[in-house]
Length: 503
Image (cartoon, rainbow, N blue to C red):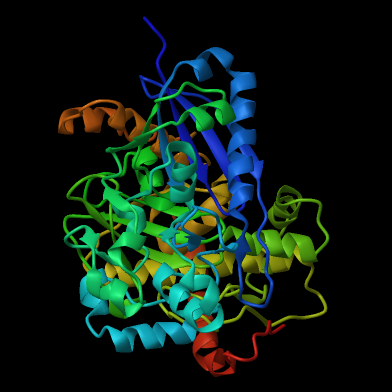
């Protein structure tokens, strides 16, 4: 049998991943390249798109060196990427400024303005206006970088800029476009009224395709960059969470997962378009036609663990987690409470000015106590998310865990105890988005009916299963009540002109 492989490219915030998959769905190899963000001011977060291009080249070079035969057999490519970023190109397709990322909170005032300009915003988009979305960023640029915005010919999402590099085509997919606030999510098309509210026109938007459709073919120049053949099909691809769902086989109503990456996400496939904007729940298009999902998002998750590792001077997260494992059960109940809002918060608070806080510190507390508090605080934030999803009638008994946080059995068990659901991990936990991108590439390579799609999107095998420990859950529930009250009592301190960390 002739070897046929598919390449998944996943543009994350802190890492670029490339993955090779064969036609039977087996992962043959993967490669990762770290990336960095810049924070020019408090609450700002940007990346240079050229960093994405170089990371893509480097990751593909690693794969081609490690798996030369499989790399040479690539039939199609799928894309996955961090959502919401505003990448501005001029008429010559030159990048005008660093991309403003999803975790940038500078446009909170513009969210109020946008809602006033378009009172039907939540009906059209299925979401509230939040600083992380793309549209408010454009209003901010109108006010603060007017001349630069006047030069803007195209606005692209991060992965769609890479698509332009690969194909020379301006294209986006439904799942990623749903996170811009310019998409009519129910009808899966651009909303001219939402574009007009931000001073943009359809001509400045990329063409839309479904995630599993062909979006373009690799140019001669791109083929030379990646050491591949000209003309390779490129799938529409998906936003990172929808791509992860494809990689995990979460394609049926009720399927879901938790993503512990830079941000934290609870993702649930829904039977239909089911908006719940009043609780800051996102309703987006899924990565398959006529399919949607809900998503509750907290802005800081595994990034909180990285932060506490750095400020406590530990070599890496693994070493700090080993210290947490040594804590006695009675010590856990005396740990400080931690509000994980290091980048503001989305679900359920929609408060760009929320800040992180430790509460209840004593001289006896060590780095391991703080680290446990961080793990617990992220878990409590995810419980906030799960509670608002359940309020819409979504039943959840089991969730898969993906992202960098999925490497930690301690965190997985803690989440099971906090959320009172079974948590599973799989071999695909850390590469789910890249695997989903590769699967979308495989779908775009041919015409696939529902039976073929189901064959390609097989559920991820369970590596470990974590069941709730009810004794632990009872203790944690008491601390969760304190966590909720802490946010309520301190939120008046989260002032727009005075970002702070309360310790």
